[in-house]
Structure formats: C-alpha cells, structure tokens
Length: 107
Image (cartoon, rainbow, N blue to C red; front, side, top):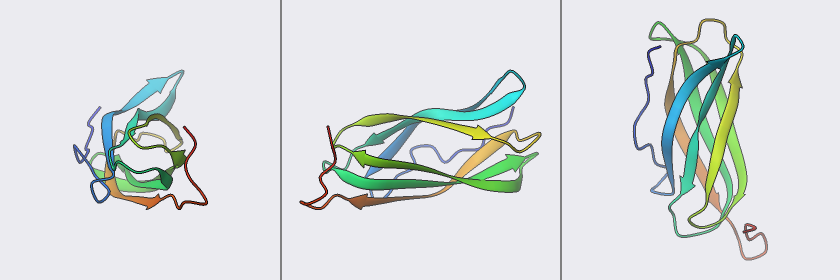
C-alpha cells in the first residue's frame, strides 16, 4: 500500500498529525491516526482536507472534522474510506478556529 502524506502537516502551527495510515479490516479501508492541538489555545473546530489516491492519482476527497479540542489535547482520527482500491492519501489543507471566551472547548 503506497501512502502519500505530508508529514508534520500543520494548520498555522495549530495542529500536528501523527501515525496517519490507511488500514484494511474485513475488506474495508479506514484512515486512522492522531491529531494533536499544539496551538496552546482551545480550538472550536478543526477540519482536515484529504485527497484520496489510487495508484498516485486523486480519486476522491474527504474531510475529517473535530470540535472542541482543548489546548494540548490529542484525538483519534478514524475515517471510513469508501473508494474501492484506494491505496494512499494526501493532506491538502488543515483549518482550525480558535474558541472564543463564550465557546471555550471542553476538557
């Protein structure tokens, strides 16, 4: 399985992705990994835009979203990939929104 991934992908130095990989279980493919909030601030929303690849060509896209991520918190990424034969992915963009005082992320 060829994995194409922008190692150490960051959103304005807010998010770090670790151990991102495609896995196959029971003939289904999933993207798994860990996101870490390294911003030092609570984040209201995080969106990770992904290109799904097959033989090095983009065959689809997906978005992973997370909400209410506290400062220095990590969260598990688990996303079903329903594109037959997908064998890689690429992080296209990571966006994050810092929490306001009224909408502080839960710890």
